[in-house]
Image (cartoon, rainbow over all chains, first blue to last red; front, side, top):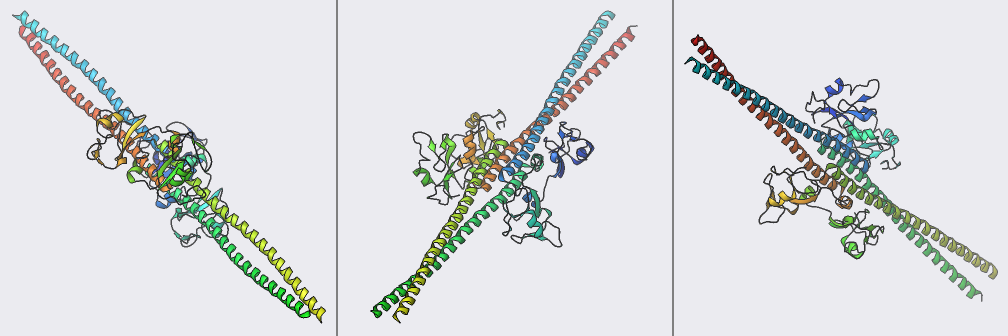
Length: 148
Length: 148
Length: 148
Length: 148
């Protein structure tokens, strides 16, 4: 997981703030962007602008929970609810993975475009330079013929 | 789920206190048995006496969590940890189901035993009564013969 | 798991035939009851009479699958489908557990009823015997008084 | 999911051959690479060369299974085994997602490198051209001065 603030993208290893709209932020960005602090009016997701009205719509979570937490967090819930919680958490993870694939694909595409632009620009420059060199050679030849 | 205090066994529908040793109590029993209140020394499970040292070894849980809770409770955790939490909660549920099967089976067995004991006691009583009746009939016959 | 044929109820440990209506049978009962063999017309569940039209509505399954099976059985499916398959299998298991709890509870209830019936019958018999004994004692006393 | 044969990488939508070493191939590649056909000696994974000795080490799977399949595929298995199967399938999926992230990241990196190489090559060419142009300008100036 990486912070979904595109200016940050720091690797999340210990704590993170997750939203029910499937976004995740480092604790610093969450505070800076008004996600973790109670303010007037509902919170909004900095990534997708969704209103986060319920208390658990954005929560701080420990990414490496202790053993007793892992044992008791869902205990007592019916198997159907347990599987619902697990399925939603997996959907969250897969959304983040899909976004990362898209992000890396976007990076590859945008660099490919810059490569093509650069290549075209340089080709232009080299054509201009070759034209000028050719021009200068002709000038020299013309001067040489005139002086003889 | 039913409260694991055998004197209570009340149906748990809203809130319950669960332990990492796979037991569950109604909130009243948990308080009465010193499970939910912080006391000197580690807490102990009223059902199996296990020491509950870590903060999440006994926690109060809502059995019908809200939608935002279900979405965010495990979000951000890796799929491996998500599945670990889910598997432990399912093991908890299955332990409780197995205990309930055992409990109902124990009830059936103990009533079967009481049935057999009662049946034997009554058979004795009836045999005694029949013997006494036979004895009295013979006595009457003997008196009748003597008086003629 | 136990065979859902009430006359059998054998413990299922190796292979079993499961249905999509959440019932399970030992291989012998499944064959005897026409569940595993292809016959004319759709198969029916021997427990609930549901029509089993699709090929996977009743399948023979190994209850202790090998490691390579466990790894590959759901591999390739999306996390959403994986969780759907798992949730359905857990619902199956919980239905069976709930039925077993009901069955044991039914046993306990029916033995409790038989206990009460027996107890009432015996009480009647003993009352009758006591009345007859009392009657005979009075008869003896009356005869004794008459003979003096 | 995409076919793990790097020359193919076709999107997998209907059927695919999955291996217990977490790789997946389109049916055509699986056949072409000897994965689906029974041959002498154990099969080997075309992606990582792992020996696939057990029958379920490489299986053809339907990526959009029917409803009756989804209901019965894991039914009858204990919750612990159900969760084990699900966890392994999720690990498979996440491995593939991680590989795709790596692949897209590798693409981005390799195009970045090509961009830098191209940029350096062009800079050299342009420097050479500029030097030659400067040289020719000086030559023209020198000729012009000599002719006056």
